[in-house]
Amino acid sequence: MKRWIWVAWIGLGALFVEAGWALEIRGIRYWNAPDHVRLVLDTSGPVKPKVFGLENPHRLVLDMPGAKLQAPLPKPGGHTPLLQGFRSGKPRPGLLRLVVDLKSPVRPKVFSLPPNKHYGHRLVVDLYGREAKPVKRASARHKPPRLRDVVVAIDAGHGGDDPGAIGRHGTREKDVVLSIARKLAKLIDGTAGMKAVLIRSGDYYIPLRRRMELARKARADLFISIHADSFRNPRVSGAGVYILSRRGASSEAARWLAAQENAADLVGGVSLDDKDDVLAKVLLDLSQTATREHSQDLAREVLQELTRIGRIHHQGVQQAGFVVLKSPDIPSVLVETAFISNPREERRLRSSKYQWYWAKAIHRGVRDYFRRHAPPGTLLASERRHVIARGETLAKIARKYGVSTRQLMLHNALSGTRIKAGQVLKIPMGG
Image (cartoon, rainbow, N blue to C red; front, side, top):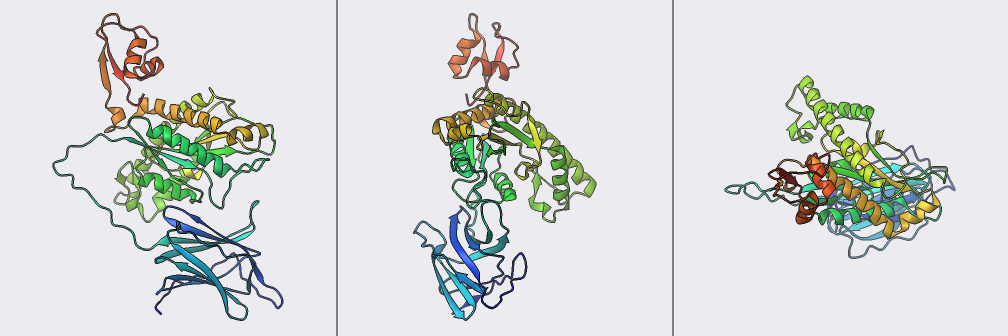
C-alpha cells in the first residue's frame, strides 16, 4: 500500500475531548462543481482533523479525535467525477475515521466555517483533480485574424451550501438567480456577435474572488452578477444596479500592487510584474478609471431597461464594495432583481415568466451598451454601413437590417428621425 502524505491540522480553535463528551458529525453532503467537488460536514462544534491520502486505490482519510458519526453516509452516483463512495470506522477508541474512496488522485483543501444564520459549525473539504489536461494551442501561421464574439460573464450569486436570502415561503436566492442567469445566457448566445459564459452553471458554491478569476480566464468583456435583495421590512421592493465604489477600487488597487504573483495578473493585457511601483500604480489607476466609467455606462443601460418592467428601489446607479465587482479591467455590475423578502416579489421571483422579464431587461441593457462600446476586433465593432437613398425613412432602414429605430438613433447619435439622401448610417450588429 502506497501512501501519499498530505496532512493538515485545522480548526477555529483547539478541540478538547473530555470524558463522556463527543463531537457530533450531524450531516455529510457534497456538491459537484466544474473544477472540484466540495464536501461539507455539519458538526456540533469546531473540529480539528488529521487529513491524509492513500493510493492503490486512491482514498482521502479524515481522522477526527473524539468525534461521533450521527449522520448517514452519502452514496455518490455515477455522475460524480471524483467520488467513489464513503466509509467510516474506529481504528482505535475515541477516534472516528472517515474514508472517501476516490476515482482518481486529488488535491484537497480543508478549512472550517463558523456558524451563520443557516448552518452551525462546518468542516469543508474541497477536492481538486491533480492532473490538469494540457492546453492545445493552435498554430496561428498563415491564418488571418478573425473577428470574435464579445464575451459576457454571468454570475449567479451564492450556490451550494450558501442559499443566499430566503423568502417567507422558502424561495432560495441561489435557485432563482441561477434560473435568471441561464435565461440571460440563452438570450446572449442567441444574439449575433455575443457569447455567454456562466460563472456558476449548477448548484455549487464558488468563492467570490474565484468568480473574478473565472471571468478573466474566459477573457470576458463584461461581468454581470445577479442577486435578489432582502430587507427586514417586507414591504420594501424594487430592483437596483451596483458598481464598485471608489473606496472599493482603491483598496483593490493596493491589493493588486502588493501581490507577489503579478506576472499572472494582467491589467488590460499589460503585466505589472516588470514595472516599477510608480508606473504600475499609474497603469492600474488608468485601467480602473476606464473600467469604472464603462461599468457606470453599463449600469445605466441596465437600470433604464429595468425601469420598464417594474419598480426601482434606487433611482440611480448605486456604489458598493462588492468583491465580485473588483476586477480592474472588466466592466462589472451587480443587479439586484427584486426583494425576496417581499412576499409579492418572492412570488414573481419564483415565476418563469417574470424571470424572463428580468433576463430580457438585462439583455437589452447589455445590447445597448455594446452598441456604444463594442471592443475592437469583435463582430459587433465591424459595423455595416448604409448610404441613404432618396425617399428612405429611418424606420424603413431599421426594418431592413432587423434593428429598431431607437437603436439606429443611439448608434448614430441622432437627436431625431430626420435624415437626408447621401447620409451614411452605421448599422449596429446584434440587433
